[in-house]
Amino acid sequence: MTNHLFDLIRARMPSPGARFALLDDGREYSYQDVLDSSARFANALAALGVEPGDRVAVQVEKSVEALMLYLGTVRAGGIFLPLNTAYTPAEIEYFLGDAEPAVFVCDPAKAPALKPFAEKAGAKLETLGVGTGTLLDKANAASGSFVDVARGPDDLAAILYTSGTTGRSKGAMLSHDNLSSNALTLVDYWRFGKDDVLLHALPIFHTHGLFVATNTILLAGASMILLPKFDPEQIFKYLPQATSMMGVPTFYVRLLQDARLNRETTKHMRLFVSGSAPLLAETHREWRERTGHAILERYGMTETNMNTSNPYDGDRVAGTVGFPLPGVSARVVDPETGKALAAEEIGMIEVKGPNVFKGYWRNPEKTAAEFRADGFFITGDLGKIDERGYVHIVGRGKDLIITGGYNVYPKEVETEIDGMDGVVESAVFGVPHADFGEGVTAAVVCKPGASITASAIAKALEDRLAKFKLPKQVFIVPELPRNTMGKVQKNLLRDQYKDIYAAK
Image (tube, rainbow, N blue to C red; front, side, top):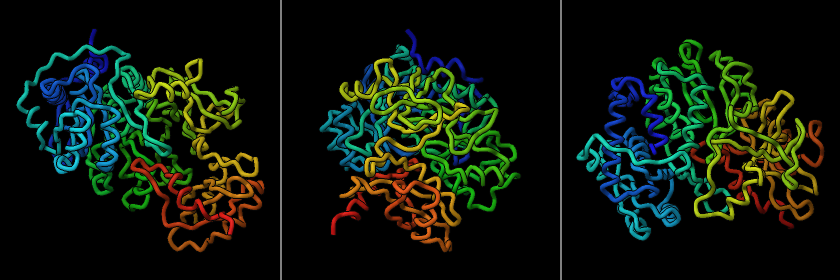
């Protein structure tokens, strides 16, 4: 047996001297460096006692060393478990207790606060920073060659914890084949080749930056410009050297605010991809007008990597996430009965394919509840498939508003509000209401200097939506709460406004 994922990466590498990454300090990292450094980390982990199937939990800042630790974990037969750098020690305690990793790697500055939780979970504590850390010292002292541990397609390569907007986060178990099959599909579908240079400004504790971006580049034998974070100054500095960029909608909104964005500065880019949160149709339109490029929007999840994508060749339709990727099946069903719905009907999106995870870590009950008998995974996302086959996302199942016995899909109301002059974006959500069960409520961000008011928004909707869909209150807010990947956190809005319809 071979090491399924890393063997594929190795087999598709270009010449050893070819560039894998350009770092923001000007250093270049070759594919030979990838082989050597990942081997050193694999040796260091093995010396720490990591055995096949052991978890290696990691909460560190973005760096090329952190990527090599990911690959080293795979080569050592371990299960890579990246954790959001924003998690507090109290949150880390939960993840370590749940995953019980053999090794926990953290930022050197956080080690004193996190050491007690590592000890409590029985994990060996190591540190890793940019060019520093105890684990880096061990890796640098280790051999640059390593005999990869045998792992098959169904063996786990990673566990990623869901964002946990309702209840405790759950660990999604991703196999070697989940990751490799999806990356191979994206290489082909998005036309990545050895000459591509990806502008990488995403975090690497999330599926978007770690698996979609990094694995796709590795399996294309391409290269990346690895930036510590999204910074418009850095983006414009390196754009002339890049051919592609993957980002969240916030990236594109911020860049549209910069006068340097035009057809000249983006002329040799071939692909801009957006995901992890919905892209406003206005952002899609403005980007195309300014640059001549149509942003390619796609749809994925922690549990599945990528499910759908707008086409590389063909219409990239704003407000949709395109077609199911090759090998992936998608359907829309009645959430209660599971009955398949016709085109244009809104229901629960379910998917099936080699990209779909193996289940939730140590949670067989939740795993069983989220899969249909025929193997389709219940995504929790509400949407529809239109007559042309494009998939539309209208919201999370938990965001569905039931008011007076009627179902209200937030996206429908948000689309109407977002189309008004002076509006940047909106979030529509339900909060408790004594008479209706839930009251439809809207939080709206307006453009600076716009004269539109909450009452004017409410009035304008009266001619556009059925009465039961109308917000009972509209609030003008400076910004919407978002997580690190740019997703609007409606749970925070529901909590903030939970008492507005309470009986006086």
